[in-house]
Image (cartoon, rainbow, N blue to C red; front, side):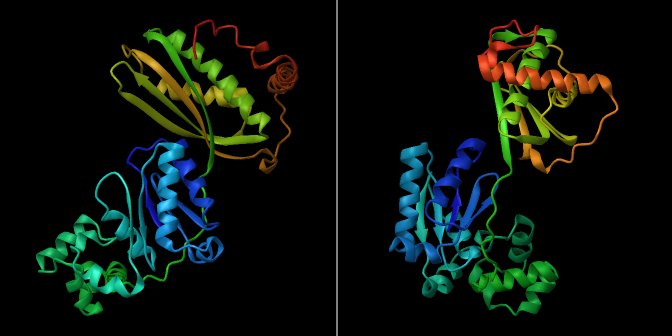
Length: 322
């Protein structure tokens, strides 16, 4: 089963679609940013339903629970399923191709509809008079290789005949965590933006430490008046959940934005590629100032755990944010 979500679907909704798929099959492969695969052989026996029924169940759940319509293609191989999902018109639907239908169904489609054939290769094939997948399947594999190149030609020749031995490999998205802040009014003051960013860093770092996690990178997204956005991602030198490390990187990101007269309405700071904290090898630091800050951070965490997250906040965060 190949599932296509709407373009530009927010990551949190995409993750929830993956969770809905995992309820139907334990073998789900994320294909970010908006697609995914699921192996259905075991799921058919477990649920006592056919593949079309499972595709319909997924679509109904995605619409009713998430407000997201999806295109679900089902077939005996990844190529057939992915090609089927690409042939669905409209915002969503389910198209299932049975094994005995593959040759006839693929044969009538244009070559650019075959999953894995890009615009460049499609143009090459069209220039030689190969306009449909049926004609591509009829060509000797050696001829296809000469036209498209060795590896691409071998794959295309096989997939045009419905041959695709690739398995679905379970793969989830790297874990992330994010904090979003909106301004009461459009903000031009760079110092005010940095103050809100500092508060965001503190909140994000606390969230990571509570989860016993650390981030390998940060993404800063700024939204401006009129709806335009700017975002940039940078990797940390080493995974961390400490305010010092995240603050330094967050300030580098905001500096990279080169803000001058941009009127900011919101910002989002996201921790990328989150891992378990016990995977980090802590090294002994000879920086006494840093060690003192880490001790203060531990004390702050205990105070917040007892009296609430707002018990300690940066002194500069006096703006009203949400």
